[in-house]
Length: 267
Image (tube, rainbow, N blue to C red; front, side, top):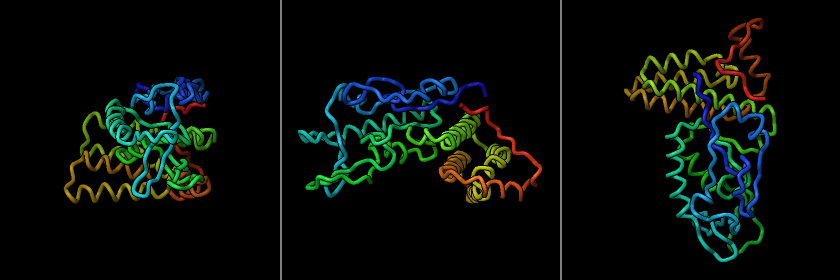
């Protein structure tokens, strides 16, 4: 497989001046060290719905019934626009073949966790939210690996995320040929040592998922999607090295080595 995996990235992280103040939040590891390993696609949801740059700040507000995306100064509500845009853009990105997404942390549109949510009648925000665009994307496409740039500052988390992206890229490449029962089983067999090395329980769970899917007469494409969704859920947790080493010793013996099916990861 010669094509570089395609990675969607919040545009401000790639150095584009799209933040509310007209500035950028360039994440230099993406724009310098890792750029050559991926085909990066930039996306800014606020600009995408026509807010422009510079623009008023927005925040997530809990009105007691739902979470809204609003301009706190004048009450302008961008919720409907963002939800519609997020669904259309998420579909377009996936159709284009992205294999992962790097989101801007703390953003009311792109943050994945601990985004500030304001409650009506309260001055203090609670960090319990998720950016509106990010929430739509991850709900629609839970099988695609995602991360915030803040976590990429940890070398172990960065390496683990890129491994997940490469794993998804292999699955995506194989899927272009059309999934069959045989193709799914072969994909699982080829990658079983990788799964054991990263998430010791994943191999067993995924093997059972494949068997149950075929026993229930599900279409191979349905089984393949369920397979990657479960795989990415299992891989989402960074496993400690001790359980991994123990699991591999049990399966292979302490003198064997584990070969990864992936190209060298970015440094």
